[in-house]
Amino acid sequence: MVTKDIMTPLVALLKECSTGLDSNEMSPQEKKDQNRNSIENIANEAVNVLWNICECSSRAVSIFNKEGCLEIVLKYLSRFSTNVDLAISVAYCLQTVTEDNPELLKSFSAPALHVLESAMLSPVNSMEYILLKTLVAGTIWNLKDIIPSKSQAEIINAILKILSEVLEMDAGETVLQMKEAETQRIKTAAETEDTLQNVNGDDLIEDDEMEGIPQRRKVRRKAFISDLLPPTDKELRETIALLTAQQTALEIIVNMCCSEDPTDDEWEELSSSDESDSFMENSLSECGGQLLSPLCLSHEVHTALTNYLIPKKIFEKTAFPNSTAVDVCSRNPSWKPLIRKMSTIQCRALVCLQSLVSLLDVDHLGGPAALQTLAQHLSQLLFSQPDFAKHVDFLEAISSALRALLQTVASKNIPQCMTPDQLLTLCRAGIHSSNVGVRVNVVSILGITGSVLAKEDGTLDTLKTIGCFLLEVATKDPSLVVAGEALDALFDVFADGKEAERASVQIKLLSALKEFQPVFKMKIRKEGRAKYSPDQLCVLDNVKMNLRRFVAYQETVEKKLTT
Image (cartoon, rainbow, N blue to C red; front, side, top):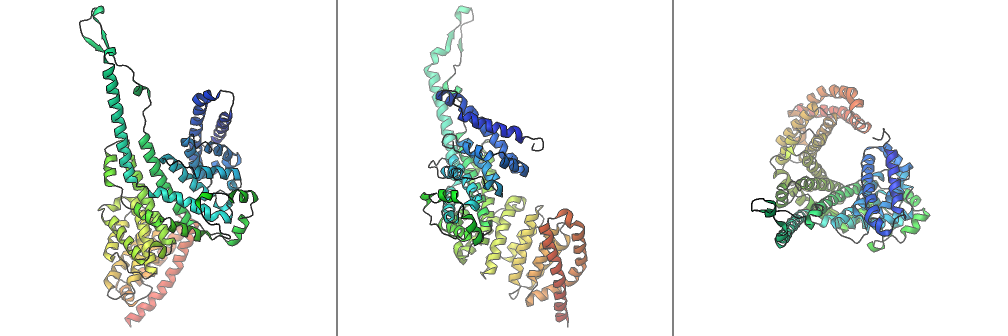
């Protein structure tokens, strides 16, 4: 579409709608009844097209920047109090185009930021407005690089306050309540129509005797008010809005956890903007945050995450969807898609949990006891589903969370809660997944587990099992990324420890790796540039170098144990 120049007529339409909203040719009542609604509906459709195109095309984003689309869509957003649907479409679009787009950030003036602030701090708390505020919060997070350091703490607190409130809501209970409300509304409407039909029954009966038709009564149905009203799915729309808001909130938190910390020099440079400074000095005053300069972003994020109990709320979202809500949705075709949305929230929460476990200190996560509880929770989630390997999204998300958790627990010398047998069960199922991410995760999990066991006594048999498993993956997996991860895991497991040394000799690790070494080098040379990114190739080159060193180390181990 972009290649065929869809952007030219699309931008022209957006500008025309913007002009139409400002038109004074019609009376206020006419505008309200005819012009405004139709123009806003067209604008809404146009913004949806713009958002989807920008989501898929960097060229479209570049045109968005150059054609001044920001000013147009911000004008639409400013109408959030009267047209929340249009505002939500704009918020989706803005969240997309502001991501990794430094050129556009220069176009955000103080009035533009004020529009975003007004939408984010709207006092309306319907579910559609909750979605709007969540999306705008994500946009403002994308703009963090243009917000002066003295206002960063307040902005972060404002964003996380909104996300916390979104995640506080019980999605399962909301589904049940809104479905019941829909059922009652439909029932009441039907009863009202029956009542009106009975009251006006005489008017619906015509005597046809004058026309020579045999005596009978003919019922002619009148048009009732309920027939003239469009069918409504208000409850369904609001429920979808809440579920989407929760999914978006979790995705924003992941992005916040993954952001790189800017240097002090960068903060000083950012804080020199005169116009933004004057606006932000008084911005978000309701949120009560303290202004710090210079600001360490990661510290502020960590503190706010903890203050708003974000880890606890994310932990709650990792549970399986409310079974009663799932059952209700499964019996109603229009509500059935919500089952997938609830499952998606669980997967996003697991990914979010992975980020938090990797980012936060153990104390911020509740201490060692909380981590052990978390491990038990993830274990229950995993093994309560006999067919967990079939659910690829869930398996990738929970294996990512487990990988991060086990790494943190191992690094802090906290006792593991999951047994090696449990982890091997997960890994044997996960290694056959078509998803490379799942296979990488399960291999890494075994590497972490094996490296811990290598320091303990009486673990020889388990280490041999882990070693054989990893060796088979390294030599047979079709993906070099997975094979490289398996080799890395082998290096970790058999790097040190008496039990590890004995196990490596008994499974003939050295001879297997010597045989595989030239094969691995050849596969990197033949497949590398065609199939893998520069970053992946860099990692694979490091693995290749470490393999050479590890083979040399294993030669000394074998020599020591056989002499």
